[in-house]
Amino acid sequence: MNSDNTVPASTDILQKVQLQILRQLPQQPSLAQVAAELHLSNRTLQRLLQQQHTRFRQLLASCRHQAALHYLAQTELSLQQIASKLGFAEQSSFQKAFKSWQGCAPGSFRQHKQQGRTQRFIQASGRVTGELWN
Image (cartoon, rainbow, N blue to C red):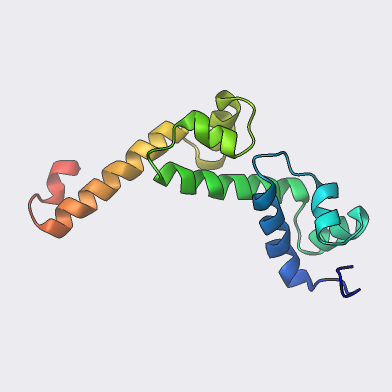
């Protein structure tokens, strides 16, 4: 139950859990911590997530994945800094997780995204055709 003694609507619970996970990063968020922040018992939170066909670990991975995509767009952050912000103890752990999410290494993903932005800029400016990038 939350502070007004009602269980949050199941459609809201995913957003609330994701927000709590993101707030707790780079610490390793736990189901117990998130449940306490939402004024729910651990079991109630698990049940609500199960009703939405997900689990806490899946939401944690999803939040880390989305945050990684965001941070990789900020090219001034190193892979080590991103790993740290996402709560990974080692850069190698982040790279392994990212590869499982995206199918490529974070450095390759970043490079591909940067090339895509450059290509769109050049095409928009009309200076070079896209044929040079194919």
